Length: 294
Ligand SMILES: Nc1ncnc2c1ncn2[C@@H]1O[C@H](COP(=O)(O)OP(=O)(O)OP(=O)(O)O)[C@@H](O)[C@H]1O
Ligand SMILES: [Mg+2]
Image (cartoon, rainbow, N blue to C red; front, side, top):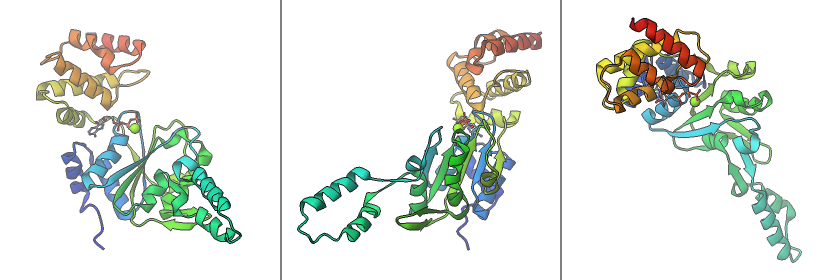
């Protein structure tokens, strides 16, 4: 069968780079395997390290439609899978009653009411029913209650959804599925078992520099290098919240806007609030920079 999306791990990495996502070997190989093994990927790691972006970039690079389910506390079946359009069903019943001359077949009407016409598909079902290639992103899965995870199990292992009134709907094509988690709670074993696991940590200095060079317009090699170096040293300090890749990018853009070619300790300190979001962290980092500059 040649319906694989990717030839090898290296081509995943190269193609991701073309859509401006810089993946390391670990990321590229899990994406490659997920396609070959037809398994979902559970992506976990600190905030702002490119978990959500990975799914978006894979969709872009494969020319697939991205279907996203944003998870939150209280998310239920009706918002995740499907819902019957009660209003429309009710109108249909009323219309039937109004015109009833004794010939209405109520069994038939019941079947009609629970047919496609009255079904409202939500992201999970939409991904299963899609005819075109899709990437399904189930974002921040750790925000739903553990009981809600059960809604996903059938989809994640069998790529199908059972609807009591309609029967089982099987996927027309196997979508690539990404689940992301910030690890605010432990996920169920049942869910983890169905997925390949990918931990995305803060990037190595070289990769972060490359990300900055790719994403920040007008930045010099030298400044990107400095940014990556300083961010790395700041991440080594014990902080409440270490700077994420998105904050590195914001900081780099700020420096470019300020016309800075090469950062000195003073300029770094004055712009630390872009990188860090707690006053105590800013103070600690400023002290560290002062020591380094000596
Ligand atoms: N490897 C990478 N290549 C290119 N850009 C990246 C990479 N990693 C992160 N980014 C950039 O960092 C930003 C933040 O990434 P993203 O939103 O995917 O983080 P996240 O891990 O989903 O964070 P959160 O846990 O807060 O949702 C993105 O806008 C993306 O441009
Ligand atoms: Mg995210």
